[in-house]
Length: 351
Image (tube, rainbow, N blue to C red; front, side, top):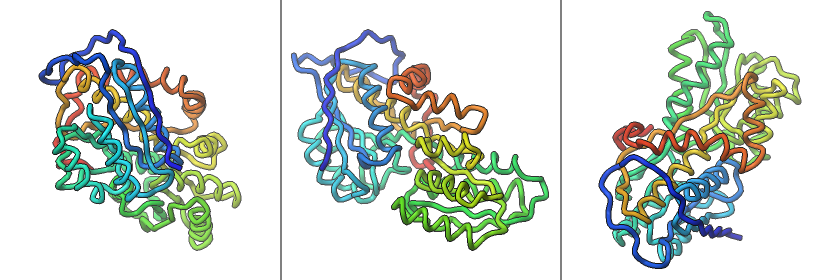
């Protein structure tokens, strides 16, 4: 069943610096409505973005917000839900696309109706969508960040094997992460033999079985690296099962991944800080809808975070509830929204 969340939030007094020009203030007695279309309602990363969107709207105040998304990874269902959302969320819509190309034409039709649409995560904006703003990480740089953490754990003349897997090959963000890992490893440890990215499967059970096979097929591997969230959960599980000597790391702050770091089965995991991405998008759309504040144009580069033994307890505490996530994120949200222009790059440079 598709979940639809309605949030009605009071206005709060908030001092902000300008992003661009301002249009006329909302004059209707009814607050404007904005919307968010999530990739799905089941995966940890997608729920984090949705929760962040609610938080950003709450900070901005003065709007209604509707959040919806398919229960599973279903691009066609996203298209269907977008049509309904556009009828209600006239103040603007954030879209976290499963497949940017699939939603490009439907999104362009929404933009033609005069409804602003921004991309939130998804890795890229598809040509023809008419979307002019995306809030997303530099996924290539996040991959390089994980590669640096890997290289720091190995001797400078390391010459063994590294296996890279991806639970969603073909998804732009994960492909860029894998590319960043390969590029930086080649730069820092040129004697390594780097395999992949190999398709590890999106389904949790399939992914677990794949990582077991990869571990068994590469008993001499120095490191196993995953580009996705399911990879992180299952790499930790396989490392524990096998009492493995190889190192493992991936991308997730799911509770099981964080426990894997704490227990030493993952030496690191990368947080794409999905809550922050959602919060910035909710804040920007709310400000635009209620006051006409101009939305910036370009690629808004959202930060990532390396999680390892030294800070994993702090992140576990942060992730324990929406309230603690909000407490930790609020200074960053304020910083990122104070001057969005500082975080913008051209949209065609997104990676």
